[in-house]
Length: 320
Ligand code: SIN
Image (cartoon, rainbow, N blue to C red):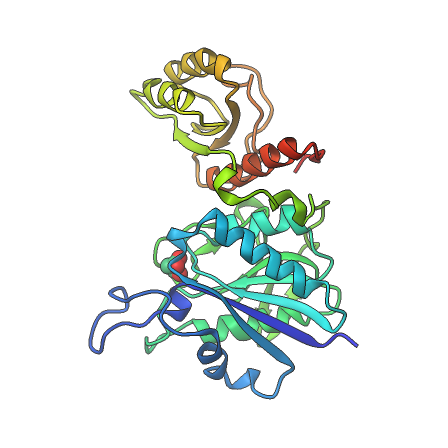
């Protein structure tokens, strides 16, 4: 019988503390352990939960090594018959990247729910406890699967979710397609289907993180030059995501540099630097390089990294 929810702590503002009297924005992330976060939520007491501290960091400092460790811990717990779902507490700043990594690697048949907070645990308006309670409820939801993000009463899928606001409590959105569901009075109202797609498998992350291919993001903008691309090609970078203008268009100086970089085997992917909307197939400037669809530039970087890792291992990748 599956009833257990495993909560993996990684830090973030949800585990943050501000000094007495300080503003809610002047806090230190990743101060409280996962046991303390669970103990602060009355609705979770007496529930079949396990908590494990996987990391303790401000998610702006997320590393490939921690991604490898987290993905392995999630895969380990997903394989346990008694586990119904997983919750990961995570900083909001790179949550969308971790969500996409876990979805593309594991494509879990059980729910893996990332949650966090926009106010530290010490705040009088702390949003973490409500978010954590919702995330656990989502991890227990009948039929739920895939990697999900639960924050501010909304449920997002890993492919569409973006952090869209710097400090509002409801900082996350799913753009044009909207959230997968919403919690209303503690009950989930589902609006769209759970995430689907095949996973690459945990073995795609097996290589030592120090050997993972370097993948960078370069923004196309007015007055751009090809200097960054030239430098990346020279220093052995394997992939570059262009945070492109509009529907994936690229400044001609960057295009020329990308053509020059062909000798270096640099793999290119185009995402839009617009806050919303997918890059649709079109002809014209930049169209020679694959488009990242609705993935944000940061998530497109994860996608390109995984494709390069899979190619290194000879594993086929399926389109997103
Ligand atoms: C972080 O991403 O770890 C800090 C910011 C946040 O959680 O909102």
